Length: 243
Image (cartoon, rainbow, N blue to C red; front, side):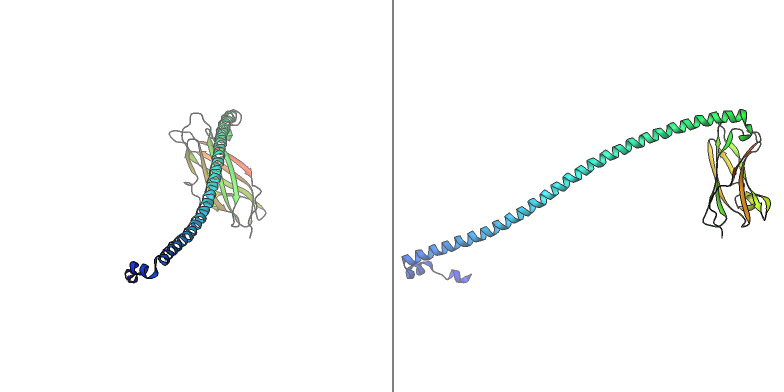
């Protein structure tokens, strides 16, 4: 920039003359105006393009926002419908449970009158199930006990399980202790309303099961008399994993 400081404008104007000096001045001004105009147009176009892109992006964001709001409203409606359906299902389940309980009470009354041997002081066998496993001759059992007395005390006792069938062409009766490591403690119960007792056993390879018998035993104690009831079911038709 030192060369600009060396320029003496009065001397330049004196050497060029008034006309050429004015012409040079207007030329410089015109050049500055032209360059400024071109630079301004360039930046204006750049800003216009940037604003156009920003507007397009903003429109896309507004559209996504609208779709998101619509999706949220749809999910809120679906959630409310699911809540309502769930509430209705819970009410239905409660009604079914109440009806089931009433049926159980009526059944207990008739069993006590007509078939007292089917219950042990109000305790009945509600379910007996046998299921196979992936291991050959290895089965799982489940027994559900229910107390049907209106004024319920804790029922204490244990169950016995026997499998009847044939072995080598002869009748055979196996107890749970013969085919399982389930102890008497595992078979014991102490409940007020219901209890599930489960376990597993392995049958001999040459044993053909035919029926399962579960007995409920309430031993004599200070709070209860001795009672016993049992129930038998045919061996269920299940696929046995034979070797």
